[in-house]
Each structure stands twice: as structure tokens, then as C-alpha cells.
Image 1 (cartoon, rainbow, N blue to C red):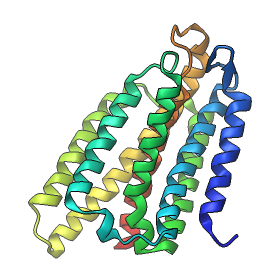
Image 2 (tube, helix red, strand yellow; image 1 turned 60 degrees about the vertical axis):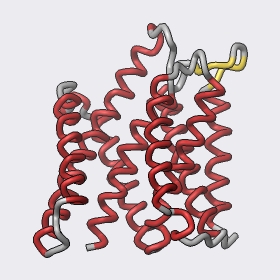
Image 3 (cartoon, rainbow, N blue to C red; image 1 turned 90 degrees about the vertical axis):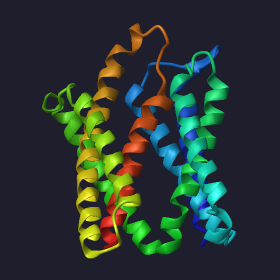
Image 4 (cartoon, rainbow, N blue to C red; image 1 turned 45 degrees about the horizontal axis):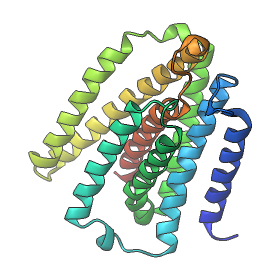
Length: 249
């Protein structure tokens, strides 16, 4: 089994099996509240399984970056990802169970395409950064589970403001900064700030999973493990991308 696609497809299969055994009621077909935290992380694992399967499948087909990342396709990729994400987070799984899962899969495939250049440029760095991100994610999650009182709900507002500031800073970097040593230092500093921001996002989103697991039984819409896992996935993917950039310098 030299093809890494097979390992990630196996990971997807095991995640799906775990989801069917723990997350879903069949009559009617919907999520249930049992094993809430486990179910969230099964979808989180499934998310990364689909993304990594996509990345390695494209590489296995040996598709050049120049054939994928043309300007029209890059714009379409970005816009489609945003629209799918907004639609996914807006849909109630209790009403659109199948549709939401289909959108979920398509969104993750697009994220896999987005991460493909990182894999092509340096596979060893991709794998090393992946393990580093996994380690950081696990440590932060454990801290959040053990010491939830360290995390304040007010963080969400400040982190949202910080995220907007980070996006503006990245746009400045992209369009207004010359490619000089000074701009390199600017980019590095922004990357470190981004890592700090997504570190806090991982912690607060983990706490939200714990709180939502307690309130699940009284929610009129029931649990939504796709939404829960997407938050954690986006946190970890952004962490991965920024650590990769640090390792590249």
C-alpha cells in the first residue's frame, strides 16, 4: 500500500462507520444527542480524511498546478467555498439531512484542492506540519476540556474583531507591500499573530462543543455535528496553513 490515498480512504471509511454507529438515528433519519462530543470529533476526523484523500488523489493523478490554478478557476474555487460554507452553516440538519451532507462533502473536496499546492511544493514539510498541527490541536483541546473556566465566552467577540483585522492585514500584504526584506518581516509577524488567533479559536470552539453537549437535549433543532466539526476543522486548517508558512521561511 504505497499509495497514501488508500490510507485516507480507509480513515474516511472508519469515520463513516463510527458516525453511523454513534451519531445517527435511522427512524427518522437525524442526529441524536448520545455521545455528543465523540460524534463531533468523528465528523472532524472525517473532514480531514476527505481533504487528505482529495489532496493525495490529485497528486496520484499527477495533475500540474498550472492546470488547476488558472485565474478563473481560482476565483471560482474561492467564491464556491464561501457560498458552500455560508449555505452549510445556515441549513438545519433536521430539515436537510442529506443535502447538508452533500454540501459538506463538496466543501471539503474544495478545501482539499486549496491545500494541494502545499503538498506539491514539499510533501515532507506537509506531513511534518500536519503532525505538528495535530499535536497542538490535541493539547489545546485537552486543556479546554480540563480547564474550561480559563476560557471566557467574551473571547468570541474579540476574536471576531481580530479575525477581521487579520484579513485586512493579509490584503495589505498581498496588494500593497513590496517584495522586500521588510515585507518578509511583516508577513512573518502576521503569520505569528494568525497562529495565536487560531490557537484561541480552537480553545473557545472546543468549549462550545462541551457546552452544546450539555444543552443538546433542550435544543428544538437537535444536534448538528457538521456545524460543530466545521468550526474545529477551519481552526485547524488555518493553524496548519500558518505553521506551514512559518516553516517555509
